[in-house]
Length: 161
DNA sequence: ATTTACAATATGA
DNA sequence: TCATATTGTAAAT
Image 1 (cartoon, protein in one colour):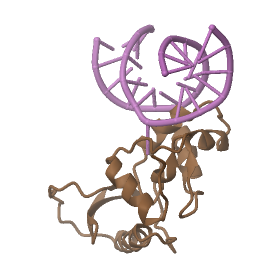
Image 2: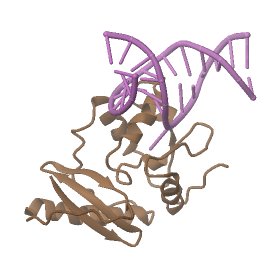
Image 3: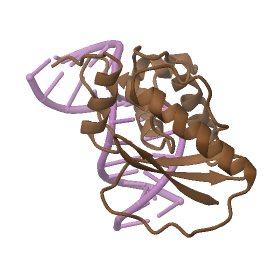
Image 4: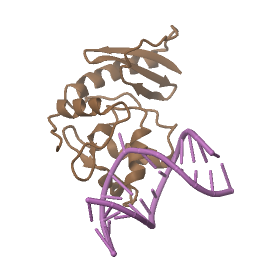
């Protein structure tokens, strides 16, 4: 598993790559993590560039032209279905937890969808921030509500009080 | 092996 | 408005 840093105006993200693709993305944490300096195979160097570009575009409210391969193999089947549904939400659009539940054929599993969103290893590129509670309020966010609001604002979405 | 806690929501009192 | 059943996972007991 290779770990690289991605410097952006918004801060320094940390990307984890498996041999299958991008497996995890961490928000800037304030403290610098030690990253073992290792030789990166060509595949990883390319994925790193794709990830950075996709992040830049998404953080500025644009559709990412290309995404690196995402390795979601660590997730349960249920989680993978939720994450798949999330990726179908367009830039600047939102859905509710209940709608996601319905979209994957389990209309009563809204709460479980919330759990799956929290377990999402690749925030931003898998847009867990575009999911709101049914009454229009924000819900929650594992990396902090501040980030969720910021991401939504960059896409022109205003949240109900 | 059970119980509990979550980033929900529809329903009935 | 409040209590409860439902649902998938992980973590605690």
